Image 1: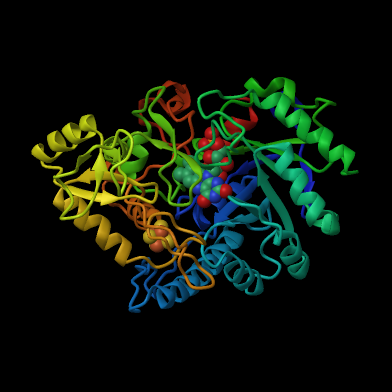
Image 2 (image 1 turned 30 degrees about the vertical axis):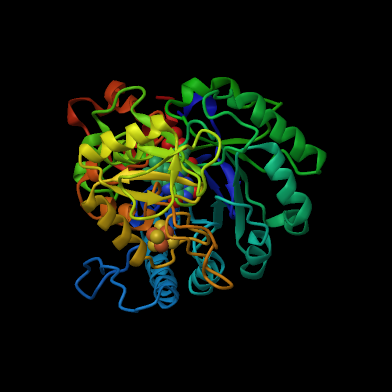
Length: 468
Ligand SMILES: Cc1cc2nc3c(=O)[nH]c(=O)nc-3n(C[C@H](O)[C@H](O)[C@H](O)COP(=O)(O)O)c2cc1C
Ligand code: SF4
């Protein structure tokens, strides 16, 4: 018996449970996790963000980039991404064995999003039920979905964002909009869709926001049977009692991102799984270091702390003597006019004395102080860029026109491609970006995971359906 008589919904022409495993890049959902989720009757999501391919022996093919220019490496990356996602989808489809449904997830802000999506859909006809897509305003998503006759599921964090997408594009392809994913921008793992109007420090209750989303959808004539998928902070369904069969909300489904990270089929390395059991409330930080410019949520480990520290060792400067900028910087920079305040000069001198001897300029007329080895690592990562984003704050790469954002590369950020590939493929968890939702501390408290128990996906899905 499912919790509160939760009923299957119609999706892609069959009955599925209204529970979704959210797509997680890079390689944190793949064929194994999403195929198993679908086989258990739910909607599994293959991450099509630089997914893994396999060699003849079944080993993951390392994504090594041979080309000399970023532009050429970007083209290599598109090919890797298409090949990887196609392989993942085929395998997931086989594992699902006709049950549930397989979606894919892409980020609109990833480099080459459109050719990658088209390349994947071209080679997976009949295997994919829907495409979930967030991070940015993917106006083109509906048109591409129509071309390949798959569902599309926009991921949004406010009724306003949905309305803009609908008005401009999606109303023309209303029949293929499979669901609307509301991702709580204060709670969900990965990138978060906080707008300028929202305060990262003041989380808002999702209920009125989702209710407003449903009202907005109704005003546009969208049927209540088109589900709203609640994502972010969902753990036990019994905590969402009032959301189920609630006439104000219409059909609701639930998306899980963090909780399924700890299953047998979850492809993340054992070290990452172990670390999840050890988190306390407050260990996940909503921050703004991502090179996409978006907010995102990750565990506040050594890696994230070092980014925080780097930004803390930051002072503003002007190129001419002006206002309070009355003294010249004499550490970290060589022979140039960097005018700073007396107080900031003292701070810079103390950082330099502590080994942070290198000053790096940011795009907002500040200088940060790092060690020589940190500087070398930043420079190397910027030089190795393979153009994985449409706009990258860290390397100033842009995937179109002249391939540059025209801004200074920002040393306060980092190469997200490198660190997400590294953590997914077994490099130390503490030294890499560990995306997680703000409910990750619950692993420690949830009796289901006690005594080091790791469920299969099927066991987790059954547990979720029971309300627990
Ligand atoms: C490790 C990790 C990676 C994620 N990567 C993506 C991604 O590539 N694309 C995406 O749309 N959402 C991504 N998400 C968000 C999830 O799909 C899901 O919506 C979210 O985690 C739900 O919130 P929860 O973590 O509280 O369950 C990611 C989440 C995690 C934890
Ligand atoms: S530097 Fe930026 S665009 Fe280049 S690979 Fe890294 S994250 Fe992607």
